[in-house]
Amino acid sequence: GVGMGMTAPVSITAFPAEDGSLQQKVKVSLRIPSQFQANPPCPSDESIKIEERQGMTIYSTQFGGYAKEVDYVNYAAKLKSALGSGAAYRKDFYFCNGYDPPMKPYARRNEVWFVKE
Image (cartoon, rainbow, N blue to C red; front, side, top):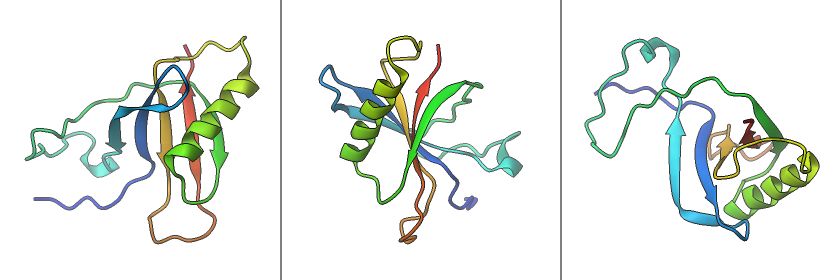
């Protein structure tokens, strides 16, 4: 019953298939605002879970525009290529992040994150 407003980033956990496309399963994560972090309200919908994301080191790339799945896949491929074979990171998932509300038309920020192993 408490409104928390929009938070950023909206983070989608993507699970790449062998060919680089995304599998149909995704997980969308929203940051709980600071004032609710110590004691978050219990979700009334059982499909919503509260998870604590541990600190992590990431490799990241940023791009603009209204991001679509194909954009995240392409920028993930570019990040993978830029890192080469020497970087150790999780290959079973990556994060697709959007920072802007849907009605913001210009100067949009999107990122792809690979989690360093």
